[in-house]
Image 1: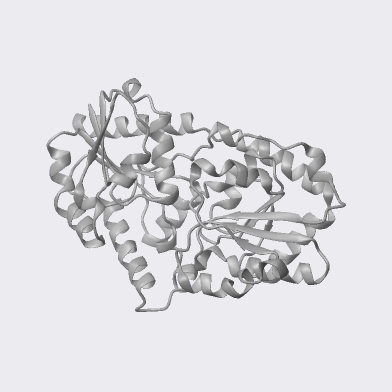
Image 2 (image 1 turned 90 degrees about the vertical axis):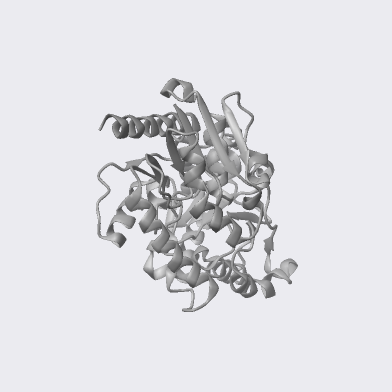
Length: 377
């Protein structure tokens, strides 16, 4: 069989996912002699080189949003029909080709409390409303559907008032280079001139960087030696504007933004951090979480979304919509060194349970199963 993969709208975490998936894949074990990936130059350029992998550059996918949309709507199906037995859509696009397997990488269109933070008739809100309808269509057309967590599956089923009987849950993995545990005596230290908190995520409203920054500022005013380091691109200019006054006075506020760091260069960023914090209110998985866990860091995280499913008991939780709740969680880490040590140990143990090899095997196995079911029907 030949597997086609649509990479026309991948970026950030979804592109990291596809890169790791292909790097750890052995598709011939599941009956695929060839894998074709359609994408633009930027996307194809980061994918691994494999003997069975054919990178199909489509010039339209280097162009504007409208050129990309036209290609997905009117060209993707034809490409698949001319050379594929099954199509994988990790970006959740709708396509008329069958059999197809879709994937849910974005929960924001289905989370009402976070979606309405974007004002009506603004570009971000219109995009989310359009994406909600597009994903509804894609999921309803799919012959197979992959979710990353059970929380994501339940949330989408509840939002769309449907049950996806043939859907599966396949967690992401963590690259072995991020399994780099620090000595536990560092976690127990109490006499520090500063603790470096790290948050790796794009700047956006549902990521709640502003609430986290306010909690850190409160604790600093009480004498806590905290620094907050943000790493990630700016997705929402208004959210970044709320942080700008603090970032312009970083020497005073202790809040720093390092911009988007290439995934291949993230290792030293984690190594320089002392604690990891993740206040996002709407995540399907949170790829940065197992990477931070692999560095054996104490973690404070949102109690919303899929984060409790990913972290289990390896974090102290807070409500990301409440500055008071975030402040109390950080105070817990400040005042309880033995709690920090326990959380760090649990985080590293939990990280070892996530495997890109297992994710890849399960994903290719499931896609092959969907194809056989379709052609045997």
